[in-house]
Amino acid sequence: MLEIAAAGEDELEEALRLIHEKARAYRGPLVHEFAEIARRSAPEAIELRPDGEEVAERRTAQDRFSEVLALLMAVAFPPDRETEKRVRRELADVIGKPVRALRLRDGNDLIKVVDHLPPRARKADLNLQHALRRFLPLHDELDGQDDRRG
Amino acid sequence: MAKTTAAAKPTTKKAKISKTASVSLVEAVTSVLDKAMTAAAPSQLTAMSEDKLFEVLTMARLLRAFKRLNSGSKVVHVPRQGGKASEIIVALNPASANRKKFSHFDLVDASATTVGEAWVSLEVQALSWHMSGGASKLPPAALHELDVAIVFPSSGLYPVHTQVQVAITCKNVRSATKEQVREALGLRRETALLREPAWSSAPWLVASVPADPPSPLLLVSSDPGVKKYRTPVDHLGVYVRYLHFDT
Image (cartoon, rainbow over all chains, first blue to last red; front, side, top):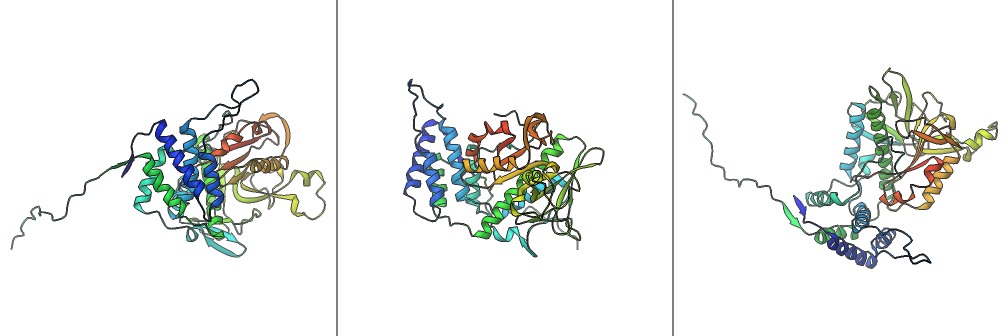
């Protein structure tokens, strides 16, 4: 198991700075993704109205970090065979029956989704993902009757 | 000969001790960065599989919400004709509601009446096609794909916009953009007219919708950054939602 020591505003800002530096220096096949990571982890620009007031309310380091981390995790740990299994399990829970395979039909061809996803992550990576989950936005926004949300 | 009772054997293996290692946030982030910076770009087929998985996850969450908010209801998987009940087959590309080829899901209420059908990658007839009279053969722009759709039961191969109960466009993206919101607005325009808010065709999902027919149209994105686009498009019946794609 892996546990992340208490992280306050300073640690979050330090992590954002690190991500920003590394993302700016990145040269590789995921250049668009890292450009976006760099953009999101950049210090917030303060825009002022003519009267000197700030245009938008500044976001907390926690909010910014959460959004950057979501993107970084999506790049580092893309959906894998375990994700496919979890989706099948969710569907099985809904219909009350087992779902053993998920296939895509392309013309007359049937493609098994799991065959085209990477293998399950290693234990060390799973521990890392698990430890960072508390920083991620995990709220389910498809839980229904939520049109009152702003 | 009498059997001897097996005595507790002294074990040579070390007892397993559950250890929890503590690291700083910066150390953890460094590990994720190392992993991300060595990641390869996914192949086209992998990317398509990921996108489709996100659509199926969106549908599963939608169906779960239906069940949870409609007491006594159930969801039934209807496999393609002759298909296995435990095997779900959905369209890779935009497709019709072809029961011979694809799975769909019946939404059944407490009185055992099927009140809707959920499909993945379903093409529906556009409002503009309906307004034009729709006399000739369907041109390509007369059909629009809904990544996830709930339509009225037995709506035909290509449901018309009035048969749509819920329309969803899914974006499994690293970065949500305003262009995606504009695309959703275009889909909104082609599925309903703007009206005063009315009781929704899926009140369990969104109570009232300013559209005729009052079908909610959702833009579901895997990027939490999409939340900044929630308003004011909700006043046009487009509901922007974030769905964490758990990896």
